[in-house]
Image (cartoon, rainbow, N blue to C red; front, side):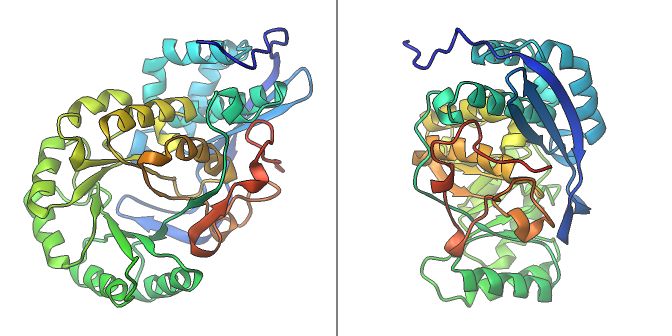
Length: 375
């Protein structure tokens, strides 16, 4: 394989590497079946080179997704800092990932923040975008985001839905609360929209214990949804298969799909599944690209997901994967920026506009992640 852009004459020298907690207040508090919070719970990694460039990376450790915490992420960073700081190029970065696979498997969000900072820094050092650096198709065009409707009370839900509809959204992800009357009431609002293009998927956040509970509940909703995300406790693939057969719907895997090895559970019936690829959960861009590549070969569609409270750094990182695998991209979540956060940490936040569209034009041909961070 011929590698273009080999800047071997100029190895990157990392002179400073640090990790910080990123606590930014939300404009509204967030609640779902597993947790409630009103500020971001994220980490930021900052990497500086001897040439005066700075790279930034973000990760969102979540106990209920990857069993990580802010403290465990900081511990992982401190433990591996000295071996990471001597990485000088992309090849060495890939080798580190390979050699430390087991450690990254249990600390994916922590590693994600580190990897993004190094890729951002490498891109700036070599005067290339992340896409150029990784020999991927250049970013172009528009990306289409989903309206996410949280498990809040009816009035808050109704108001949120009206805002989305007013802005031109037609793709909806609805969080199910497990309170049947409330859920039916909310879904009835969506039924009334009378828009041919309305598309609905549900997210149950591992709400039920058994397939029979999940099936009975979902049947009562009497709603035309194309997929359900994580209806039962994670990693019960056979039970999920039962649900998909009875309800004739697809299953979106989120907490049940964190790493490549999990393809073994889904490869013999790929038409059943959709994988929610969240960059932080998967352990960074490179591991996310690997998963998307295999999904593409198996013809399993992907949704590019997001953690609540992501800044524009993770929104930008997700675009690399979405752009490269548009052929299997079913939907995209995130790009909330200051709709959700009191402030973002970049000069021009990456946020969806009317109809959920985000144009990547301002990012084209910029170096690294192409964001101007203001901490």
